Image 1 (cartoon, rainbow, N blue to C red):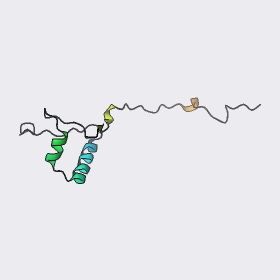
Image 2 (tube, helix red, strand yellow):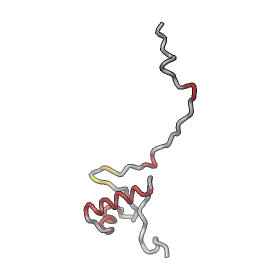
Image 3 (tube, rainbow, N blue to C red):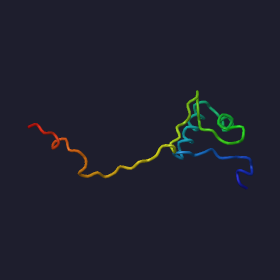
Image 4 (tube, one colour):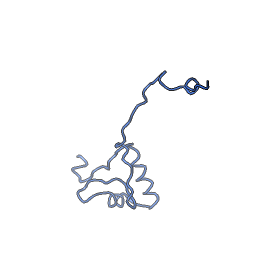
Amino acid sequence: MKQEALGRVSPPQAGIPGLWWRVVRWLRALHRWRWKDVRRWLADPRGGWRRPHADGIELFDIEAVTVTRYRYRASRIPNPWTSINHA
């Protein structure tokens, strides 16, 4: 049987897959919560999951950041020793 058929939905793994679990594991140890307590804290009324949050601060959504790669510029990088004219 699928987990959805049993009424269980796995938590989201946005961004770094282990980040969500690491935060939840830390909070479970800190507050001595059971999984039932985590579910009560993070599940919305429709059965979906919210990001971990506390006092209005949410866990950062790392997927929202675009990745830009370094462009090779070779000789177009200014050289500080040749561009200064002291004469």
